[in-house]
Length: 141
Image 1 (spheres, rainbow, N blue to C red):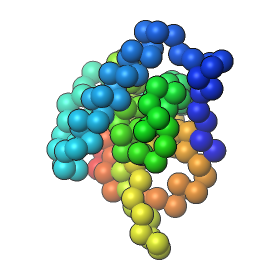
Image 2: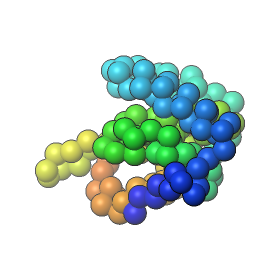
Image 3: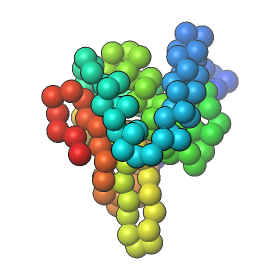
C-alpha cells in the first residue's frame, strides 16, 4: 500500500522539504539519461554510503511524494531516483531497482531497504528487477 504524507498535518520541516526538492530536481535530470548512464551515475553517487534502513527509505519516499505532485503520481522512475538521492543526502543508500513484468508488459522503478520494497503496493511484487544499484559492498546488477 502506498503511503503518502498528508501535507497539511505531516509536512516535512523546511530543511527536509528543500532537500527533497533538490533530490526531485536532480532525479528529473538523471531520469532523462539512458539506463546504462543512470546506473553509472547511481554507482558514483552511492560511494561511501551506509545501507538505508526501511524506515529511513520510507521517510525519504514520503517526503519526495509530499514535495512533488509528479512523484506522488505515476512517475515511478523520478520518484525512485529522488528517494534514493534523498537517502544519500542523509548518508545512506537504499537498493534502487528498475524492472519489468509480463504479461501484460509493464516497466517500473522502486527502492528497497532491508530486503523489502519501500512504500510500494503489493502488486509490484510481480516486477522482476533488471537493473539494481545496491549500497556499497552489496551485489548490484
